[in-house]
Length: 266
Image 1: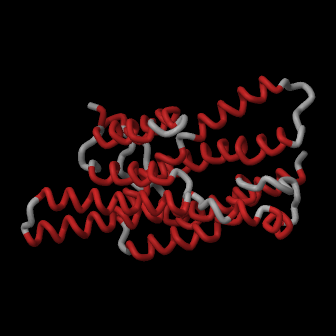
Image 2: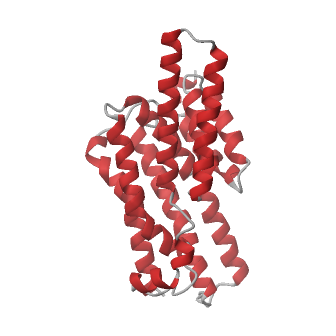
Image 3: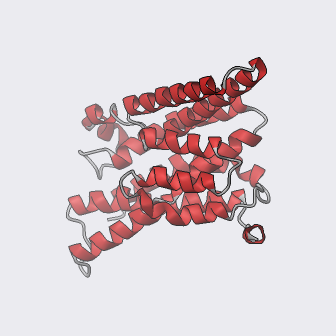
């Protein structure tokens, strides 16, 4: 019965993820630094500003689960997994400086000179990695799980060995994301693995994913995203191939533009 309500395609989900991420990053990347510098609209109290900030951060919680969900979809349907992984890694490095200066700079926060900002925050910048690294490790994790599963089935090995292998691969990936302090770290890896392993068991995959991510910070506000994913019709959407690299580029581009606006818009 629910099948007739599944009208949301992959393109729509990507647009939704990008828009909610933009709302979230406006709050975290502009409102917080401006407030720290005492830049607050005269007609607005600090309490009102806090409420708007919290609401925007709650909206932003919808973005990451959708990106993880679409990562699994992309992994299943891509013709070239290596190119997919390399694209994530390349954009991870491209995005790192914009990510660092927007969210993790403590000094020179309103300085348009990026070189001076990096110099002033050198020690801080070496301690964080952006979400593309989490997605990259997540992709490698389910790739390794898929390879081991096929190998074990071919060799007719006991199923418990496959379970132990999945646990070991997932644990290693979780450790690496914690080690490099990538955005969402092991929570992101677990969500991706859940979406992948339970991908044929709808809506159990979404229920388990929501329970898992809800244990992290205020991620329980991501519930609307899971409702949208429940209405996913497993279609890519029209003209999505023409927007392929736009969605890759959106992350570093919007971080850069938000930082520029932070510096000149007050």
